Image (cartoon, rainbow, N blue to C red):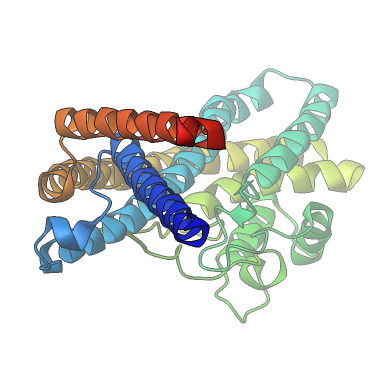
Amino acid sequence: MSSFNSIGDLSRSYQLRLGQYGLKTRLDRLTQEVMTGIKSDIPQALGGDVSGIAHIDSRLKMLATFQQNASEAHGRFAGMQAAVGQVQTLVEDLGPKLLSEPNILSEGDLRARTADITRSFRLMFNTLNTNIGGRFLFAGTRADTAPLGSFDAMLAELGNVTAGAATAADIASSIDAWFDAPAGAGGFADTVYMGAHTGSTQFSVSPDHQTGSPLTANAAELRDTLKGMAIMAHASAAGAAIDEATLRELFSEAGARLVKATGGLTHARADLGQRQAVVTQAQTRNAAEVATLSIARLNLIGADPYETATALQEAETGIQSLYALTARLSRLTLTDYLS
């Protein structure tokens, strides 16, 4: 008899543990559904046909990639816009001054000004070497490399380029030719510019849009600016080797180039602005599609909040009752059993 009762006790213990496991599993599932708002068993919720939800999930994943690309493109274009804006602000202020100062400043003041302008040129040089997250903005597709090499090496090269030039016009023309020399001719594109000669990598920002910028530190819009600054930097480096009359003419040569360069900078910024607009529009369209697909996804596999909360409460009540029953049974003694 005692053996039979022992088997009965074991069976009852097993049944209690099995019931506890089932309720705990149900509680965990319902808790997850309450937290996520999504059915825990998606195939069951869809009657076994998961093709629709698979298509939605695939599309959402693709849109997430587009949004990431768009965010990177937005940051890149914004950085380029800010850098070119700094260059343009300097050029728009400096160009007209260089045209007027030879008529009003003394020789000593003009030579001091060339030193100041050289410092500004160095800052401009560094601005064009701006990078975001280790990706250089004006290096074209070679974004892991600073687009402009050594500033001091460039000044030394300008001295070699202008050697033998007798007049301000000859000096300026030699500098122009050096900056405009095609790749392979030993000019700026070979000795100072270290980036690629093509624009930035294209960013896929939406299913039907790719965008990038052709603007590099070797683009004509920026080279025209560098020419004017380089004339002044050369005048500063040459010092007394350039007489006063030539110095005054170099101011005018540099000023004329900087004034002309403002148009190219304006065009470059306008082009960047258009590309920024394309990215913003793509982000808006992507976000709208994500919202629509997310609603459709929720309609397919969303857990009803009221039903889930009610079922969760029932499961909690069941567990509490089971625990109470288990505790009562565990307190039974032989005397309680026989009474």
